[in-house]
Every structure is written in C-alpha cells, then in structure tokens.
Length: 296
Ligand code: SF4
Ligand code: SF4
Image (cartoon, rainbow, N blue to C red):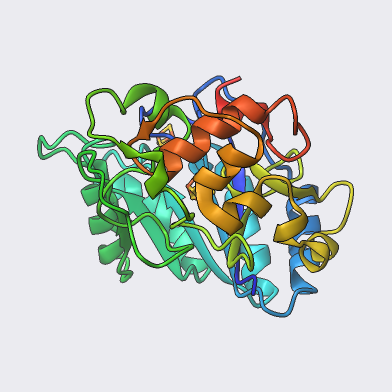
C-alpha cells in the first residue's frame, strides 16, 4: 500500500558525498518545475493510501522557492509533508531561522537534517546542530538522519524506513568509494532484499524525468507517459524484470536469472544487487534508470 511519495526535487547538490545513493553533485542534472510538481500531487491525490509527500534530492534547498511552494501545495491538498536536507544553508542560528520560518509556517510534519560525519565535521561548527537550534527557537522539534561511520549492519529492520542511524546502504557512489577493505560474505547469503518493499511498495521516489523508483535506479514506470495512479495499480512485481527475481530470491536470484556472476562475495545485499544491476543497464534501460544513478 503506497503511503509516501518522495520527490527527488533535484539531482543537483552542492556536495558530492562518497556515500550518495544517487551520484548527486553540483553537475548532476534533473530538477522539477512547479507544473510537474502539481501534476504529481494531483495524481497522488487520486491514490487513497498516500499520506506523505517528501521533498529531497540532491539538495532541495538549492531550489528553495520551488520546494517551499511544493510544500505549501501538498499541505493545502491534505498531505503530511517532509523534507530532507544537508543543512548547507545553516550558517548561523539567526540566518537559519530566515530559511526555516516559511517552511515551519507551511505546517511541515517532518524536517530531517543530515547530521553525520559525512556531512558535518565534528568541530563544534555543525550546520545540523545550528539548523536544529534555529528550528527549536521557532518552536519546532526536528528529526535527524544520522549516517554513522560505515558499518555493515543493516540500517533498519523496517522496510521503507528512512535512513536513520546505523550505517550506509551500499549502492550508488558508496559502492565505488566506500567498499574497499570491508568484510564480505558469500553471495549465497543474499536471498532477499532487506530494505525495500518490492512487492507492495510503501514509498516511491519520483524524479523530474518522470521515473517512479522503488529503489534508487529501479523504475516501475514513467509518470510523464502514464499517470502515477495507473503505474501503481498495474505494477506487478513478478512481471518486472528486476523486481521479479529480487522479490523471489534477492540479489542471488537476480544474478542467477540473467547469468551474471561477477564475484563470489559482497559486503551486503545492496552491494551485490547494485553490482548486478549495473551490468544489466543495457538490457533493461527502461527499468534501470536514470543512467546517472549508476554513475553513467
Ligand atoms: S548524500 Fe546528500 S548531501 Fe551528499 S551528495 Fe548526496 S544528496 Fe548531496
Ligand atoms: S539495492 Fe537491491 S537489495 Fe538493496 S534495497 Fe535496493 S532493491 Fe533491495
């Protein structure tokens, strides 16, 4: 039952973190305009189960007026709203309040601030702390996303849960930059996807190219070609060339089905899954997209 729609408002980011799932950077392209946002919201409204609209990226504050208007539109339509930010804009508490006040006034339900060693030096000048203090002075309590130093434990047992605490999912740029030297396990262990509900997605991420993604880089349809409500209604994981094998037997089954065996060992399910998918992009360009999420 689809509950959350996450706008990848932009793939552009002022940072270029090693752990980024999406290969975001200052040069990454793909940003929603307001007409597109309204179209997604109108369509989301026809799906009864959808409760939440999130704006994330990339860094959504780079397109602040569009993000704010999107939050206001979503709220006016009766959705709960949230954003995820790297807090680059929180230079001082007073300045951060200028950025946050209109957002808090919009009635936002979940303000998530990335607060971790990847985004903030622990030198007392932590932008997440500044942003959190500014929010508190405005009477708002924040949530925070914390990605600790890379560990190989699962992030959360709850599928579709936000990235809170624990470790880094090994997909996207993280596979290229963060895997060296970490302990590995036999691929025989990777018989299920532990982090996303691929059969009945709880959330989808949508980018400005129209891709409706059940995991970063796995599309179940393009909403500029077919309404989101129809994509969701017609989605059948077992008929999807990537989600089918993944939901049947995890990355091990995906590799078996398409006869892709690159290594005997990987760090975790996502590392294995992402590595196979990267090899399959040419076979399934409609489903493994956009290419930039694979660093292409
Ligand atoms: S992890 Fe977040 S802050 Fe870092 S590059 Fe990706 S979107 Fe930007
Ligand atoms: S990368 Fe693969 S195994 Fe990991 S959450 Fe996504 S679909 Fe599941």
